[in-house]
Length: 366
Image (cartoon, rainbow, N blue to C red; front, top):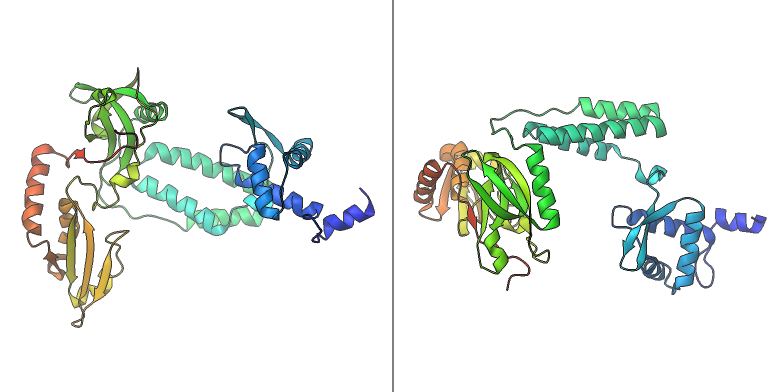
């Protein structure tokens, strides 16, 4: 490298047709890092990125030279193929230094997540999280300073969670793993319940709730094109899961998150408009709550009370929540709210669970 090259690398300046070597390297590094958590990048991806970044067309030959430079430095490796195009990514045994260093807020968020999982009795997940945090602390000890490691430990020791009664999650990890494999491969799974009954279904996803988690599925008859409604099974009542050879349509995709967009808790009921009125002495506390993450509207009334409006379903779980407020809350609408809640309670006591049939469209349904 000549003295001139070194000066350009140390002090990047704009030039005709693009950037200096330093800026190109920085852009390339940013690009590779962005694709690290994806499938990997192709030369087409690199051409598109550099053309947009530099406001100047990046030819395939230029992209090849950039790739070769990173390859020669041992910074990237092959990550498979997509069609006939090779995929590339940052070498898994390389470190990106400051660009991937954890901030104190990120470390705290990780510990908070681990603590919440432990509070909700996700024991297997907590073990995995603990292993991850151990690796992170080790990496910080090796690459960082002693002060950084001490800060991480201080953050860990400063966090604790109070306990409230809830159902302990007892679905075996091997059952969950089988279901995940079935979802990923669009395969059927035969599940055995605690009463020894068996069902063969196509699983689409899992909904995690406060008291249990549910398997979103359709029976195998749906493979014949039947409009079978989506159903839910309480996974805590499943004692065995076995992969089957029958395959579903991989093009049929369920956005499981859409199922829980509106309900309060989980429910298959029809949505309704809810209006709550909190008395003046409870107004300040009520305003600290999120009653609905997407459509709630809070209004301060002249008498000091607070009105909260949102559209939801899940009358039973909402009534359980409102019972905590006693006479400090009034349900303005629907007018028959408490009658609905009593009926839902009777259904709950008879069935031992919430409603398990849901209406959900699947991409690919005819």
